[in-house]
Length: 180
Image (cartoon, rainbow, N blue to C red; front, top):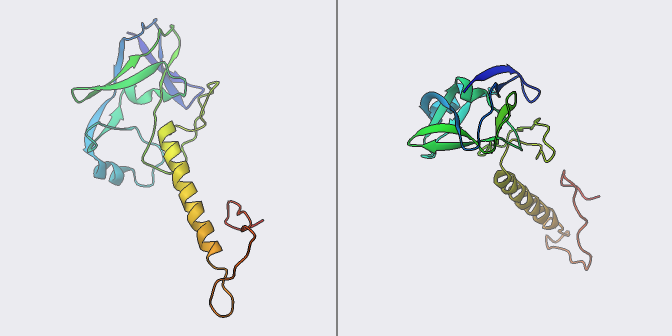
């Protein structure tokens, strides 16, 4: 298989194939030093760009290097990752034409920092986070908003320290937590 690194419209550089790749073919290994989650946090504290891949064991991270680390994210991937006996491989999920950039869906999770997507796919999610992680973050934000609304509604006290009663529903709050 002939793979080359060259400029990518998605991000900086990407990996391209110079020959067609058949669906199901093993494309490249995601290789690198095996480190702990704590070591990954230590090494990359405050650094926005990493090439880390968390293994299924939940304790080990690959600090990626080589061709595998240069495959970009896309919401419409032509490759997918699979862990086999502790090694991480990227496989073609469809036939890939010569000259095509190799991309996979990162499905990021476990962070709240922005991870905007620039893949340009027709159905781009706008983020490299997985749909499941984004749903979890929306639920978390909704709980936070509900708690804030409850706290604001609970502050309607009169001079005696007792809450006032009203038949009106409280005014809706905007994103900053203020009523309109």
